[in-house]
Length: 89
Image 1 (tube, rainbow, N blue to C red):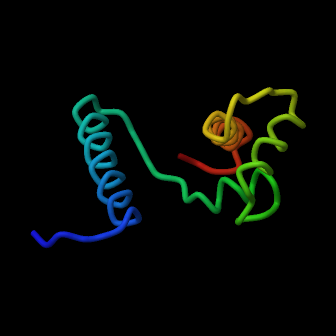
Image 2: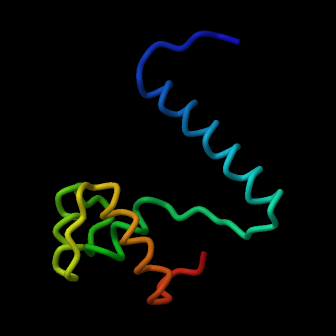
């Protein structure tokens, strides 16, 4: 294995490991799963596929929520996508 330099590569490796673990767990428990591209979530929530973290938080606040951070705002946005039937996961 070759050593890569930089945090972007580290983040990609960590994400890959997380995705593999989550996929294995879902398969083991026979839970259907599918990824949603980040741009899809942002576009459905704000109208912009490249919305900032602040814009995602503002969008959830406009729906009556008070997310503590951008991660919570993203989770709420995914819930709305599924609930409103805009995307099938």
